[in-house]
Amino acid sequence: MNPPGASRTHDLATLRPYMRPHYLLIGGAIVVSLLLAVVDVPLPYFIRHIIDDVLRTRTRRQLFGFDFTGIDPVTLLNVIFGLLVANALVKGVLVYFQRIMTERVGQRVVYDLRKDLFGHLQGLNLIYFRDSSTGQVMLRFIGDIQAVLDLITDGIMRVLMDTTTILVILTCLLVMNVHMTLVTLCFVPLYVWPFVRWNPRIREASHDARNARAQLSGNLQEKVAGIGVVKAFGQEPREQELFERMSADVRDHSIRRAVWSGKLNGAAQASIALCAAFVLYQGALFTMKPGMTRGQLMAFYVLVALLFGPLRRIARVSETYQNAMVSLERINDFVRTTSRHQERSGSQTLRIARADVAFENVKFCYPEGHPVLDGLTFEVAGGQVVALVGPNGAGKTTLVSLIPRFFEADGGRILIDGQDIREVSLRSLRERIGIVSQETLLFSGTIRQNIAYGRPDATEEEIVEAARVANALDFILAHRRGLDRKVGERGAKLSGGQRQRIAIARAVLRDPSILILDEATSNVDSESEALIREALNRLMEGRTTFVVAHRISTVQRADLIVVLEDGRVVERGTHGELVGRNGHYSRLCNEQLIV
Image 1 (cartoon, rainbow, N blue to C red):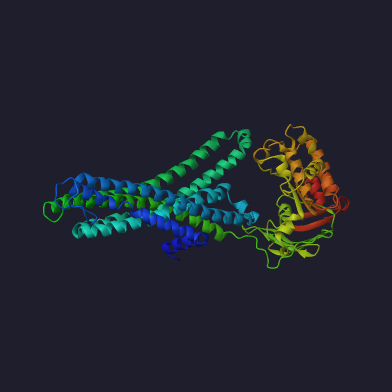
Image 2: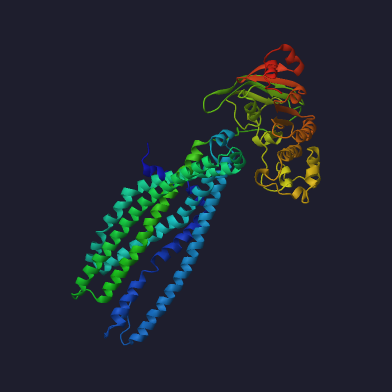
């Protein structure tokens, strides 16, 4: 097992490819940051010269090694004032460019990272989405990405600046007074110890807090989407209790993280304050002797005071670093533990002639280990309507999900016109398949956008014709906004039957060769069902169609009925043939599994 430091180094190394294209900009940001890190260092020396050369009456006056003897104090003060104003203006310009450059680096890196992460997400099969909550997925793209951005813009550059400031200030302190500098350095171990001791606790608490927020976010999104079910079953008190319990987890983990962070920052600031007290005490003793002037003491003290800011910021950056490491670890774990659909080298474009589909000894097992399909074999001629029937859990929906490769078969082959679907590109495969499912999902936007989702370049006439074929044109035109009517989140502003007809229009516009209908009429009223059935009949004409259905009217009209049980084909034939055999199909009819 790698030590924690090695793991963190590996996580940080994953950012290197994203930063490489921006090295020139990063280099400029580093130069500006280094200048900004030392821009305040001359200020203590100005104070020293004001005390020693302006406020005190001396015959010899100097400013940064230049001899100003013979110049009156007011003139020297004006020179110092001018230099202070110039220093302030330079600092303002440096702050502006440093912020702009670091933000550009951070946003560009995060853009590329988010883009690749989304591409990886879209390449995952549906098993991942079945087993993962929406909140966990959203946390990767919002919370974790933001933590990485904070690391780049307020972490890495800030550490570089503050480390440079500390080194420059320590050098100046050594030049001014070695003994007092050594006293100051004695407090460094006292400052470093809390970071070594408590940083792992902060990291652990940050990890727990983020997981708790992901669970809370996923639960909230799920319950908001299903608020009608919650109200229908009167479960508001139970959901309130669950929400409060999950919120309490977020609260407790966040407080635990704050406690450890508070201890760390408190110990760090106490050590700095003790250091300042000793500096004043030692400096006062030195000024009683000829070795140090009052101006030098104040310059030394101010330099130590300038050390406080970088030290405090490093304490805060440590928390930013811990959060970012947790987020990077989660992002890298997500990429490492999830596998994308892999295109085989030399994948060909699917060529459709008749749209014959053949299943040869197809096997599939979910990660839980229970086999769903076990040696399934049958053939479908192009243009046939195939009804898949069987008890719940027989593998019907899993079977049709294998055709567009939402899942990958564990064994056997699926052929379309003799071509193994694993040997063709996913894009060419899915372009020739249309799907209308039981749970119709529409995206926020207009009816026009949802119908044209599969073909964004479709013309107005094509969209209207697709709506007409789907029996959706009448209710679309009845609304004053027509195709530009907003459907709401997940199509909430439309009825179930209207959503289903929009989904059919979406499939019509895609003009697929193979059609999959998964319980497409099960959740609508009788009037809508008649319109949907008529639209589906138009859509199925001339297409190889797989129908997962429990309604006898649909099953009777199929060219072929395939009866599944325990992942195997136990019967096949037409309705009349299967009823006459008095076998599995007849039993399903008698048990009202087909009504």
